[in-house]
Amino acid sequence: MFSGRKDKMRMITEDESLPGHDHRLFEVPAQHFVSFTPLEPPFPDGLEQAIFGLGCFWGAERKFWQTEGVYTTAVGYAGGYSPNPTYEEVCSGRTGHTEAVLVVFDPAKVSYAQLLQVFWEAHDPTQGMRQGNDVGSQYRSAIYTFTPEQRAAAIASRDMYATRLRDAGFDEITTEICRRADLLLRRGLSPAISREGAERILRVGRDRRLLSCRVDRSRLTLVSGGDLRHACASACASPCCAVRSTGSRAAADPQSCDESSHGPHHVRGRSVRRRDR
Image (cartoon, rainbow, N blue to C red):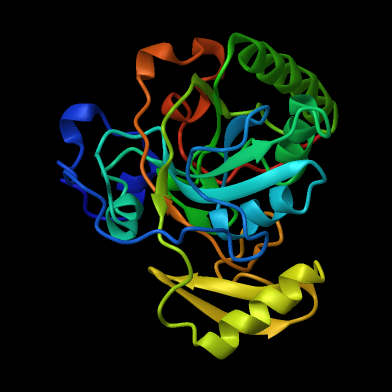
């Protein structure tokens, strides 16, 4: 039985997972609210896909849609067991998913290595089952790869960043690197946001200035504009702001994970501090 915060600090087994649902329980918008590009396949020929988990997806997605060469982004849940979970089910820690971002990109304009750089620099990959004050297995750091080349690049970049972090006095990277996990999309903007608020988000997003926000259960609540450091009342490790998004599922075979990078499944969930030097 899951009874509290400590239970969410470990990765569940498939036998412990919720049964899920046989269909998606909500509608996903046809297009991205900022870029006006589709959120689901088919995508134009020549584009490639990547999936990254780096904490609260509302802020994480922004980092990628602002990257030159990215065609579209969407957020949802990846790496878990329960089909078509709801936001509340994922946050219970009983589906096995992590919040993740789908990145569809043009490799002629931005390389996968450049996206990996955005990923590593946008969060703290040493924190196990959390990002800052966002606690639980749904906030674990993860990379889900689509090709052997992506997998090799992800592992090489992890090893390089691990050396730099170690030299700076941080603990080991806990990022899990697994073969592709389908991304279960999350719904778009919360109905709690008015049309006026949505239009304001769109204007700000086009200008690449972001509204601070916080995620209150499944509701996205606008707080204020301005300084990104004041974003996200849940105090993500990275400045967590937001604008629109999507989201909902994914299931990865745990056996397909790189054992040396399986991180959060084998690391105690904890707040990781810099080592005393």
